[in-house]
Amino acid sequence: MIELVNISKSYRVGSAYVEALRNVDLNVHKGEIFGIIGHSGAGKSTLLRCVNLLERPSDGQVKVGGVELTSLSSGQLQGQRRRIGMIFQHFNLLSMATVRDNVAFPLKLTKLSKAERNARVVELLQLVGLADHADKYPAQLSGGQKQRVGIARALASNPDVLLCDEATSALDPQTTNSILALLLDINRKLGLTILLITHEMHVIRSICDRVAVIDRGEIVETGNVLDVFLKPQHPITQDFVEQVADSFDARELLGQREGRLFRVNYVGDTTYEPILYNTVRSSPVQFAILQGTVSRMKQTPYGQLIIELIGDGPDIAQVVADLRQEGLDVEELR
Ligand SMILES: Nc1ncnc2c1ncn2[C@@H]1O[C@H](COP(=O)(O)OP(=O)(O)OP(=O)(O)O)[C@@H](O)[C@H]1O
Ligand SMILES: [Mg+2]
Image (cartoon, rainbow, N blue to C red):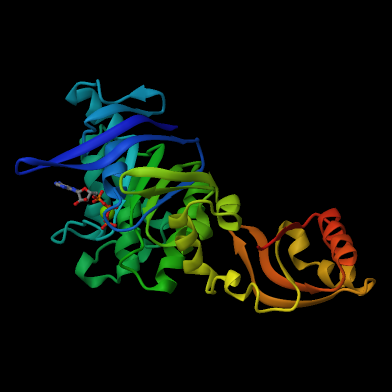
């Protein structure tokens, strides 16, 4: 649905150039929620703004729904942009206009009659849960409600793609979750493709299907959220995963413990099964749990434990083989 091919972008600052993006390739499938995570200054906003050409890449191609955007005339580009909605961290609402008028604004450029426009606004406000707030002004709304207006406005022209630039970064955790739930809901109901950027792993874990990690203008890791969470490869990715793991690096315990340390990953239904206990029960091996997370990624339960196994080599090897047989992913820490 969105294809970026070898995108580079440099900004001119005085006589120098800042390279904000370097040779970025990205492929976002129709109907998925794709997250891009990176630290401040990594190039996230630049990348997102290249998708609707709010920022023109210095090099490379941008394709949305099969249409290459960089070679279009400005009239053609305007038409294509209607298929790409966008929401912002600070909402960017018109402060002098009511909620209704904010949402109706993009419809002014269409051929809809006034009655059709009004009907569409009502429908959109219902979708985002603001039907009772149509006549209020942005200053009378909470942050979460403002973002709902932003979402309704972005959806007004029935886009195929929604771009979200740190859409929940100005919100408290509870409101963040309600906006994420709304994004997931419209993704499902409308089949909308969502590309979002964030610096919070929580956002990625809650609603994204796939994720790319960006560092200093380059994508350093891409994958299914589940894989990236359970086996982050790049140091930057590992930092982000630690944000939500709420834990220390278990490797610190190596050499301090009598037994051997293993990382055990569970995904899906096995997460809630007593597999560890049942496996060890019939063996002379003892175990201790040194660290553990059990949570959910979108709808999929998962768990990650660091366990210590105490016993003889062959007995431990048998336990590890049995756990693997039960479908768990087991890896020794060294
Ligand atoms: N208009 C501009 N002119 C010059 N340099 C810019 C411009 N916009 C961004 N940059 C530079 O490009 C780099 C990437 O910026 P960008 O805003 O894309 O990062 P970001 O990942 O969105 O950061 P944040 O999380 O703080 O929003 C930074 O070094 C930034 O200073
Ligand atoms: Mg940014």
